[in-house]
Amino acid sequence: MRARRLRTGLKGWGGVGAMAAGCALAVLFALLLPLVRSHGESGGPDAGHGLAHGSATRAAEECAAPEKQTLAPSGADGPTIDEIRGREGEKRKLIVGVDQNSYRWGYRDPNSGGDAELEGFDIDLAHRIAEDILGDADAVQFKAIPTNQREPAIQDGRVDMVVRTMTINCARLEKVAFSAPYFRTGQQLLAPKASPITGYDESLAGRSICTAAGSTALSTLERDREDGGLAADADLGTTVPNQLDCLVRLQLGEVDAVVTDGALAASQAAQDPTVQLKGDPFTTEYYGVAMKKDADDLVRRVNRILEQWRADRTDGWQSSYDTWLSPTMGDDPARSEPPAPEYLRRS
Image (cartoon, rainbow, N blue to C red; front, side):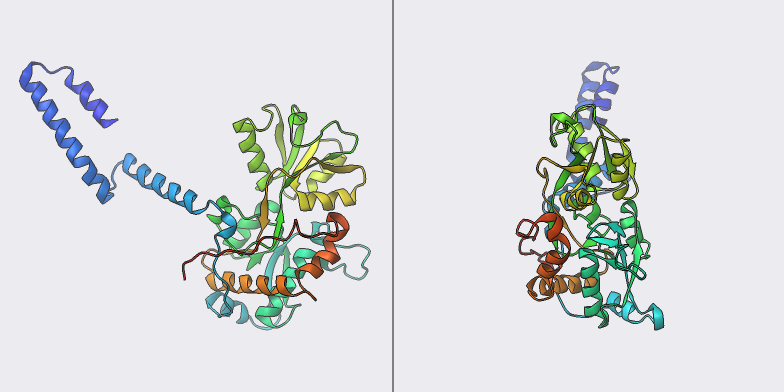
């Protein structure tokens, strides 16, 4: 841009001397430009943009597989774990952000009697983490966190971690740290059984689709619509704070379909016999435990706990799947169990 301006300015000059001077300036500029770039000097918007673009490119390259961007397991203590253990009296608990409306993941069963305590697959995992860190599986303070507040709740320190069917992705890794995956799923469509919608295909043209604000489903649909993978006239204007609210909108006839993780969609279909999953999952995603970006000791500890939980055939991952998810997802957990974890190489 600056070279173009230089050439424009030269048009008003006359004579061979002026042309020579202009060439000399252009050569000098060409010689100096690499030096300026190599030193990364700031001062102009172009320099800042170049640095930011380079960082973004490197970050994108490093995040080609977001489920692998986590630290190796360790049982060592650290400042984050020490802070949790240092809480006194009734406050000596692990503070975990969860859902209280996701059937069989994190919900209150009204038929369980008493106070209808939170239960489900994610709740089992939270208890397991508390048992390892604090020596008491019940030393957990659950906080119900809406879908669109999961990252802010971690960043603001309202919770120590979020265990809430939270997909690991590159955008979220800019804000929070994740454990290794503990569950595999994919985006899937939920619609009334009588609907002509057949899946994530051309049958969505002109249809209204509900997603949760801040969800992977919403970002995926927006990207696909822009790239042509989703009909341009598909209506994505209905977003809700909590994913379960989409089921209510569907039941009221306010939307034609819901897009969410297949694991959650299966649970919602089990709650309402008039709706069903339409088509196959169209992405592959992984749930992880989310924590603060600088909580390395806690991330490593949770990764060790996850390895032990998956290896425990008596009271571990398989047991929780059989208890909570097999009624809605089937007796074969192979498609839901994540692959063996891979970790960052840095120490």
